[in-house]
Length: 197
Image 1: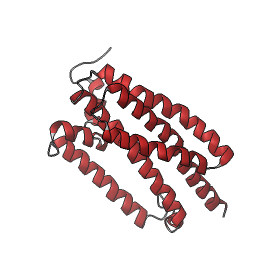
Image 2: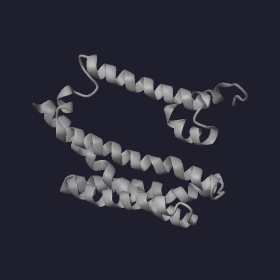
Image 3: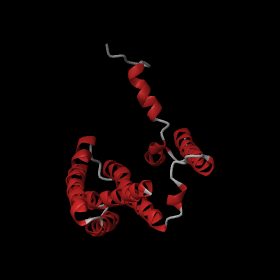
Image 4: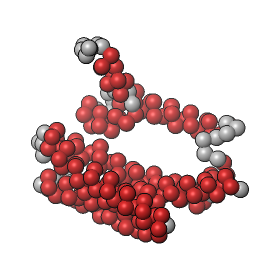
Protein backbone atom coordinates (compact mmCIF):
# COMPACT_ATOMS: atom_id res chain seq x y z
CA UNK A 1 0.00 0.00 0.00
CA UNK A 2 1.26 3.46 -0.87
CA UNK A 3 1.92 5.60 2.18
CA UNK A 4 1.26 9.29 2.25
CA UNK A 5 1.89 12.16 4.61
CA UNK A 6 4.99 11.34 6.62
CA UNK A 7 5.18 7.75 5.42
CA UNK A 8 8.18 5.99 4.01
CA UNK A 9 7.63 7.28 0.47
CA UNK A 10 8.60 10.76 1.59
CA UNK A 11 11.74 9.78 3.43
CA UNK A 12 14.12 9.64 0.43
CA UNK A 13 12.91 13.06 -0.59
CA UNK A 14 13.60 14.36 2.92
CA UNK A 15 17.09 12.89 2.84
CA UNK A 16 17.80 14.42 -0.57
CA UNK A 17 17.02 17.86 0.81
CA UNK A 18 20.38 17.86 2.60
CA UNK A 19 22.54 16.56 -0.25
CA UNK A 20 25.34 18.91 -1.43
CA UNK A 21 24.11 18.61 -5.02
CA UNK A 22 21.04 20.75 -4.26
CA UNK A 23 23.12 23.73 -3.04
CA UNK A 24 23.27 25.65 -6.38
CA UNK A 25 19.59 25.31 -7.27
CA UNK A 26 18.36 25.82 -3.73
CA UNK A 27 20.64 28.84 -3.30
CA UNK A 28 19.14 30.46 -6.38
CA UNK A 29 15.61 29.68 -5.17
CA UNK A 30 15.72 30.32 -1.42
CA UNK A 31 18.85 32.42 -0.94
CA UNK A 32 22.39 31.45 -0.02
CA UNK A 33 21.75 31.81 3.71
CA UNK A 34 18.84 29.33 3.85
CA UNK A 35 19.25 26.32 6.19
CA UNK A 36 19.20 23.83 3.32
CA UNK A 37 22.03 25.63 1.49
CA UNK A 38 24.14 25.99 4.63
CA UNK A 39 23.62 22.35 5.60
CA UNK A 40 24.34 21.07 2.11
CA UNK A 41 27.47 23.21 1.90
CA UNK A 42 28.56 21.98 5.32
CA UNK A 43 28.12 18.36 4.26
CA UNK A 44 30.25 19.01 1.16
CA UNK A 45 33.01 20.70 3.20
CA UNK A 46 32.97 17.90 5.78
CA UNK A 47 33.24 15.28 3.03
CA UNK A 48 36.19 17.10 1.46
CA UNK A 49 37.99 17.38 4.80
CA UNK A 50 37.37 13.68 5.50
CA UNK A 51 38.76 12.75 2.09
CA UNK A 52 41.88 14.87 2.60
CA UNK A 53 42.43 13.38 6.06
CA UNK A 54 42.02 9.83 4.71
CA UNK A 55 44.36 10.60 1.85
CA UNK A 56 47.04 12.05 4.15
CA UNK A 57 46.95 9.52 6.97
CA UNK A 58 45.56 6.25 5.60
CA UNK A 59 47.80 3.26 4.93
CA UNK A 60 45.84 2.60 1.73
CA UNK A 61 44.75 6.06 0.54
CA UNK A 62 41.88 6.57 -1.87
CA UNK A 63 44.36 7.79 -4.51
CA UNK A 64 47.79 6.07 -4.44
CA UNK A 65 50.43 8.61 -3.50
CA UNK A 66 52.53 7.62 -6.50
CA UNK A 67 49.77 9.02 -8.70
CA UNK A 68 49.87 12.38 -6.96
CA UNK A 69 53.56 12.66 -7.83
CA UNK A 70 52.80 12.12 -11.51
CA UNK A 71 52.24 15.34 -13.45
CA UNK A 72 50.57 13.40 -16.26
CA UNK A 73 48.04 11.81 -13.91
CA UNK A 74 47.30 15.17 -12.27
CA UNK A 75 46.74 16.71 -15.71
CA UNK A 76 44.31 13.92 -16.65
CA UNK A 77 42.35 14.29 -13.41
CA UNK A 78 42.34 18.08 -13.74
CA UNK A 79 40.98 17.85 -17.27
CA UNK A 80 38.26 15.47 -16.11
CA UNK A 81 37.16 17.91 -13.40
CA UNK A 82 37.13 20.84 -15.84
CA UNK A 83 35.07 18.90 -18.39
CA UNK A 84 32.57 17.74 -15.77
CA UNK A 85 32.27 21.22 -14.22
CA UNK A 86 31.64 22.79 -17.61
CA UNK A 87 28.94 20.21 -18.29
CA UNK A 88 27.19 20.31 -14.90
CA UNK A 89 26.87 24.09 -14.71
CA UNK A 90 24.41 24.33 -17.64
CA UNK A 91 22.53 21.24 -16.45
CA UNK A 92 21.83 23.02 -13.16
CA UNK A 93 21.42 26.52 -14.55
CA UNK A 94 19.43 26.00 -17.74
CA UNK A 95 16.26 24.59 -16.13
CA UNK A 96 16.22 27.55 -13.75
CA UNK A 97 16.73 29.95 -16.67
CA UNK A 98 14.07 28.32 -18.82
CA UNK A 99 11.46 28.24 -16.08
CA UNK A 100 12.16 31.61 -14.43
CA UNK A 101 13.04 33.78 -17.44
CA UNK A 102 11.30 32.05 -20.34
CA UNK A 103 8.31 30.86 -18.32
CA UNK A 104 8.39 27.29 -19.60
CA UNK A 105 6.63 24.44 -17.86
CA UNK A 106 8.49 21.40 -16.52
CA UNK A 107 7.54 19.39 -19.62
CA UNK A 108 8.76 22.13 -21.96
CA UNK A 109 12.02 22.43 -20.05
CA UNK A 110 12.49 18.69 -20.39
CA UNK A 111 11.92 18.86 -24.15
CA UNK A 112 14.47 21.66 -24.50
CA UNK A 113 17.03 19.60 -22.56
CA UNK A 114 16.24 16.37 -24.42
CA UNK A 115 18.66 16.84 -27.37
CA UNK A 116 21.58 17.24 -24.94
CA UNK A 117 20.75 13.99 -23.16
CA UNK A 118 20.32 11.99 -26.38
CA UNK A 119 23.45 13.35 -28.04
CA UNK A 120 25.54 12.84 -24.91
CA UNK A 121 24.60 9.16 -24.84
CA UNK A 122 25.17 8.58 -28.56
CA UNK A 123 28.46 10.47 -28.74
CA UNK A 124 29.73 8.82 -25.57
CA UNK A 125 29.46 5.43 -27.26
CA UNK A 126 31.14 6.77 -30.41
CA UNK A 127 33.90 8.37 -28.34
CA UNK A 128 34.57 5.05 -26.62
CA UNK A 129 34.99 3.34 -29.99
CA UNK A 130 37.28 6.09 -31.27
CA UNK A 131 39.33 5.91 -28.09
CA UNK A 132 39.78 2.16 -28.55
CA UNK A 133 40.92 2.61 -32.14
CA UNK A 134 42.71 5.98 -32.17
CA UNK A 135 43.56 6.45 -28.47
CA UNK A 136 42.50 9.50 -26.50
CA UNK A 137 43.64 12.50 -28.54
CA UNK A 138 41.12 12.48 -31.38
CA UNK A 139 37.95 12.39 -29.24
CA UNK A 140 39.44 15.03 -26.95
CA UNK A 141 40.18 17.36 -29.85
CA UNK A 142 36.67 16.85 -31.17
CA UNK A 143 34.85 17.33 -27.88
CA UNK A 144 36.75 20.15 -26.19
CA UNK A 145 36.20 22.84 -28.90
CA UNK A 146 32.52 21.89 -29.15
CA UNK A 147 32.07 22.27 -25.40
CA UNK A 148 33.82 25.65 -25.49
CA UNK A 149 31.61 26.76 -28.40
CA UNK A 150 28.46 25.66 -26.58
CA UNK A 151 29.41 27.37 -23.30
CA UNK A 152 30.21 30.62 -25.09
CA UNK A 153 26.97 30.36 -27.06
CA UNK A 154 24.85 29.71 -23.99
CA UNK A 155 26.52 32.61 -22.18
CA UNK A 156 25.92 34.96 -25.12
CA UNK A 157 22.43 33.89 -26.20
CA UNK A 158 20.86 32.93 -22.86
CA UNK A 159 17.86 35.14 -23.60
CA UNK A 160 17.23 33.69 -27.05
CA UNK A 161 14.38 31.45 -28.13
CA UNK A 162 14.15 27.99 -26.51
CA UNK A 163 15.04 26.26 -29.78
CA UNK A 164 18.36 28.15 -29.84
CA UNK A 165 19.10 27.05 -26.29
CA UNK A 166 18.13 23.48 -27.23
CA UNK A 167 20.56 23.55 -30.15
CA UNK A 168 23.42 24.93 -28.07
CA UNK A 169 22.63 22.44 -25.34
CA UNK A 170 22.78 19.68 -27.94
CA UNK A 171 26.23 20.88 -29.06
CA UNK A 172 27.28 20.77 -25.42
CA UNK A 173 26.04 17.19 -25.23
CA UNK A 174 28.07 16.22 -28.31
CA UNK A 175 31.18 17.87 -26.90
CA UNK A 176 30.80 16.25 -23.52
CA UNK A 177 30.11 12.86 -25.04
CA UNK A 178 33.44 13.01 -26.88
CA UNK A 179 35.50 14.75 -24.20
CA UNK A 180 34.37 12.82 -21.14
CA UNK A 181 35.55 9.32 -22.08
CA UNK A 182 39.25 9.96 -22.93
CA UNK A 183 40.33 11.19 -19.45
CA UNK A 184 38.70 8.17 -17.80
CA UNK A 185 40.42 5.78 -20.23
CA UNK A 186 43.77 7.53 -19.78
CA UNK A 187 43.46 7.41 -15.99
CA UNK A 188 42.59 3.71 -16.08
CA UNK A 189 45.67 3.08 -18.26
CA UNK A 190 47.87 4.85 -15.72
CA UNK A 191 46.33 2.75 -12.95
CA UNK A 192 46.79 -0.49 -14.89
CA UNK A 193 50.44 0.30 -15.63
CA UNK A 194 51.05 1.15 -11.96
CA UNK A 195 49.52 -2.15 -10.80
CA UNK A 196 51.63 -4.15 -13.27
CA UNK A 197 54.78 -2.64 -11.84
